[in-house]
Image 1 (cartoon, rainbow, N blue to C red):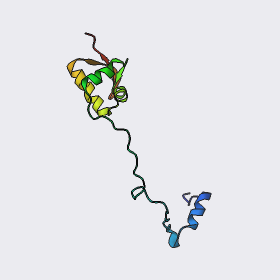
Image 2 (image 1 turned 120 degrees about the vertical axis):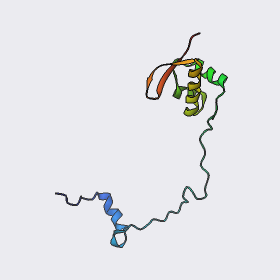
Image 3 (image 1 turned 180 degrees about the vertical axis):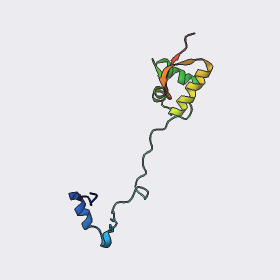
Image 4 (image 1 turned 135 degrees about the vertical axis):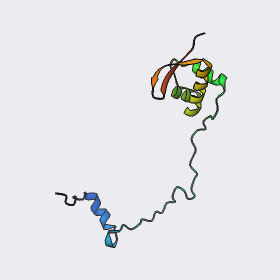
Length: 112
């Protein structure tokens, strides 16, 4: 019942490269590996670590439904920074939670 599986056609060419006792021979690449020399990889765009309150409020004014992910995208900041900013605004009473679930909250500006 539990016999050996039938090998796919591509596996037969791999077994030809195997040495004695079925051990695969390591291939020698002519190209340098990522960690060795070559061009350094380009970094992603720099994201802000902090957000100024006027800049954050300006980004929030244009949003209909305020989410942490939406604020991070529109202001060009990290989600953790956007989360801390919205939590501080919620503590001040500037925004309030109106929906969402499990960390994906939706906020709205409080009318004064």
